[in-house]
Image (cartoon, rainbow, N blue to C red; front, side, top):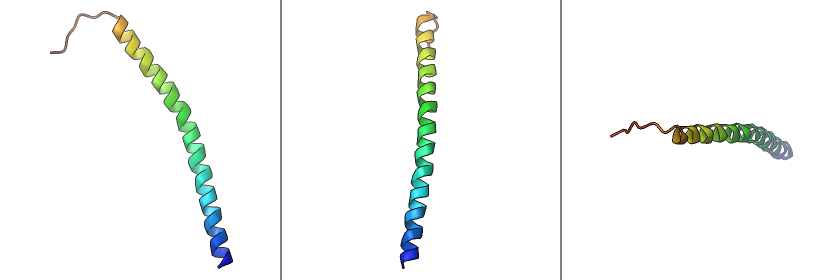
Amino acid sequence: MFWKILLAVALIWIALALVGALIKGLFWILVVSAAVFGLYLLFKAMSGSERTHT
């Protein structure tokens, strides 16, 4: 019984470490992509194109 509990704790610990690393990596990708998208929207707003989509 002790080994089953130890194995479960070890698996949960490894899973949380992997998920934490994944979230940490994806967070910076999300920040950079949000900044690029914001700059794109700013550029489109300031370009002054007169086209309308009706």
